[in-house]
Image (cartoon, rainbow, N blue to C red; front, side, top):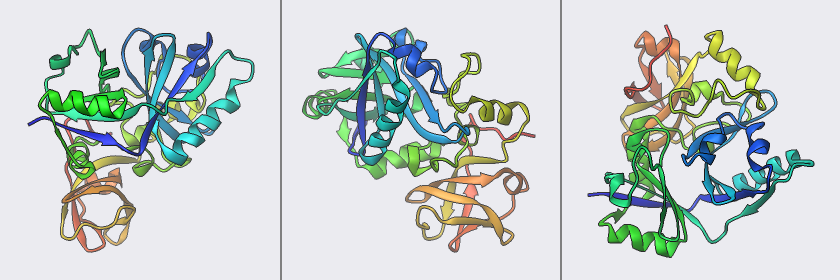
Length: 293
């Protein structure tokens, strides 16, 4: 049975104007021109020091770009940050309040005309696009909530809870914004951005690029975000993880008996026992994630 979920904590920002692509290109970690060619792009906005601030999907809608991003205060912070860099660029930011964000999975994308060559299509008065991080993450929809829900239901999809979505996402090792990555502290390469297609190494300069490049080429990735199986009562999100009584990382997203934890690579490679509030954690790395030698 295919399932879908509506994200009440996400929203859509639009970026219009003749300089929309060049403006964003100089700020974010991925190649914005790929969105202009019809594909969705997952990217991050970093601090000048190279630390994670925001991540979002970028896609083209006519003569504007859409950002599928975290909502609420996080959206306000992203919008305000981008506005500070507009200066004289012909770029205008707006919030698309009529559009909501959905994801559906366990369904063949071809059912709505999506394919490798057609990674974004009109759908339910908005757009549907293949999640560019992993095929198993399914399809995302930006559209009015009523029409999107009706269209997904008509396809035979069943509405799921957010916890069911997390139970699908977490074993795949995919982070959920600031819930799994601490703003102004997290590093992209610790959180899978290289393997999950969130960084372009050839696009040229962008804000925070130097630290990201140095982390890659000097082999400085000492922690990795990875799925863990929880043996025992699930700890609260944000609980410290210990190995041999010493700090080994932090447990972030939790859904039942699985979680995402940012763990130090050394104890994971040594297969040291990992504990969080009395529960045993067992790394369960997806196929795409490999630890540096």
